[in-house]
Structures are given as C-alpha cells and as structure tokens.
Image (cartoon, rainbow, N blue to C red):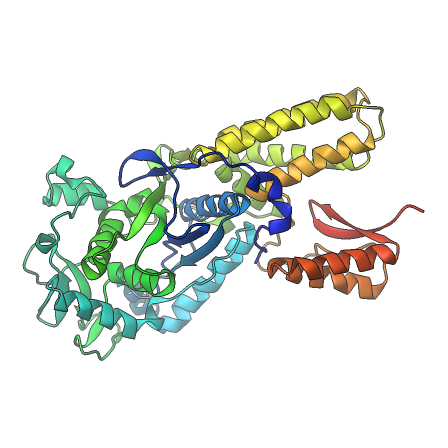
Length: 505
C-alpha cells in the first residue's frame, strides 16, 4: 500500500491558515471545518461489500476520500481513518448459496482483490479495515444497548430499531420533503444496489433490522447469539465498528450519495439513540459515476470494474486523475473518450517532468517563481473551498503551461526547473498521480530500482527509507539520505519512484 503523505513533505501547505470549508450533507451547506479534538480527524468511510469486484463507481468514493485525507494531512491534521468491509449481508448469502462456497472463501477472495485495486490506484490505506463477522460480540452488545434504552424491540427472533422512538429520524435524508416514511419515498431514496432486504415481520414499515433471525435459505450462515440464532443487519455493523475504533463522535462520515438513505440515516439514528451524542460533525457524499447518463450500479447491470478499464499502468493513473480532478459532489460521466483524455493529460505531465529534469536554458528563476507563488495560492484556495480539485488542477496547469513555454524558448535554467519540479511534487501530495502502478497478476521492476552502478547496500537503504517515512521516523529517513550522500549518491524522486544517481564531482 502507498505510504501516507509525509509530514516533512507538506509543510508548504500546512503553513496556510485560511479557513477550510466542507459541504455537510446534514445541513446542505458549506461549513467551516472543525474537529472534536483539535488537530485530529476521526474519519469513517463506508467500504465495499466483498461479494464481487468493486466497480469504478465504488472507486470514485474511495478516491474522493483519499483526496480529502491527503489535503487534511497537508493541512497538518492527524487522521484516524477506519473503513469497514461488509462481509455478511443478503447479497453475500445469496452468492454463497449460488456458488456453493464458504463465506470466507467468497469474502476473502474479493477483499484481496479490493486491496490490490486500492494499491493500483495509489490510495493511502486506512488504519483499520474491520469486518462485520469479526465483531459479532460487539454488535450484540450494541443491539442490546438499544433494546435497554427502549429504541429496539424483538419480533419472532429478529430485533428491529423503532423509528417512531427516534423523533429526528429523516433529517439527514430530509425525508419530510418527500412524504416521510411512505413506501414511494423509501423506494425513490433506496433505489440501487445497497439495499439490505428487511423482509421480516416488524411493527412499523419504517423500522429496520438490527439482528435478523435465521431463515432456511441463509446458506447455513448464522451465529448462536443471546439475540437469537441469526446474523447482523447491515446498518448496525457500521455504527458498532465506528464507535469501537473512533469513539461516539466522528468528525467525518463519508460514502456515496446512494448511502444517504437508508444506510446513513439509519446509522445516525441508531448511533445517537445509543450514545445520546451527535454521531458525526460532517456527512460527506460523492456523486455517482454515470454511463450513458445513467447511474452505474450492479443492480442495473451497467457497471465496469477497475480491471475492465485498467489493462495497463497508464490506464490506472488516467482513471485516478479523471476522478480526483473532478468535482466530487457532481455526477461524473465516464466514457472511453474521457479516460483517453485523462491518459493524454498524464502523459503530458510525465513528458514535462522529463524535460524539467534535463533543463539547461538560461534564467527564468524570477518569472517562474511568480507563476508558482500565484499557482500555489490558487491551489490552496481551491482545496480549502470544499476540496475543489478542478480549481486546484487549473492552478497546477498554470505552472505546466508556463514551464512548457519557457522550455520551448530555452529560458529556464536548472534552478528554475527544480522549482517547477518541486511545485508539481507539492501538488501531487494531493493528486497522487506520479507513481508506478503494477497491474494485479503482472510483475514489474521495483519502483525504487537504482542504476546498476549503485552499491547493493545503498539499494536496500531506499526501501528502509520508505518504511521510515511511512512510520513518520523522519530522523531515520534523514540519516539514510545523509549516508547515501556521503557515499557519492543522491536520492532523486521521479514519477517511477525514488532512484539513486551519482553526485556530480
């Protein structure tokens, strides 16, 4: 997995102290970003249901929250990020039954594929990826707590949350604007693939299952529990794991727009009913990916997986750029042409970096410094305005355009070129497109492979330095850099990763 954005690399952005605004689905407005604990972000985002390969609509969500994490890290926050894996629900049971495999065989296969795809897209990993099946005891206790507080009841072996007992139910999805609780409103809000079929007996049609009693077609999947023989409902899993790992009050809860209702609405209700405290300060949702003006989803049969579109490393980088440079709350129209255009953009950036690394013109330091200063200000303003990556990308390309013109006119010396490279690297702490992807099932030379003349012990130090930076052991990373320098080599960051180059004599 990629290392987190290193503290030593982002001080240029941390120095900025302007207000950060974030759109909150709960209020439907942009709000000044604040956290429960100063300097710390408790961030929970909904992960995949591991019964199939995640599609590119899913990965839009995962990339959106990667960019959010990257900018918050650049702003100096300590991020505590948890993403769940749903490894028990109706869809999983149905597929286990169809394939005749075990629950673990199915979910482990697709969990491994998911992590490989995250790596392919250069996504900074969360600190924890808890699975529902590993938290049955905690789920039982959470459900039991809701029963004790009068918010849940048992009916024929299943336990349900009583929506009528939670007076503010519906405020996240603003259900009062669409016939609160009606079957029509629920159908409109829940259309798609993320619905856990609560087709069990209950007191009110709006109530939802916290614990589901075992049925004969459940493929032999159940837990013997004080709640009865059965399994968890979908919504309670996230409440339980979010509270366990991050506490009763989150700073950010994220997911796709299709999760607002019922999943996040139900999470909010059961969490606040249990703790009596606000569950999350900010609810953040990304827009759909559309194919032919229609939402991409497994239920509609129009989905594409990352493996369908990323046959080559450049395809993965192009998809990442296409997503991270789009406005995250708007629908993203995915076409072959849009991916092709993104691929051309990435190639243009790579070509510029190569030209900058060998620049040898005259002057240009003052001119490019002015361009860079303005671009960095615009970049930061864009990111601080609800993670406006289109504006940030425009700022980056103001530097690209200026550099290309200066190189063509041979009016850029080595120092000016170095300033441009550093600027691009600073901006790439957020975009994350300068990396060397490895397509799952293929092999590739190590991204840190140095020139053949470099001593073997220095080769090994590159990996050690990477580990030290990931662990935020910057003192050790500096020691390695100094050791390499003392032996006549420099560590040079390239689009393919760090490499060793001999120092000029």
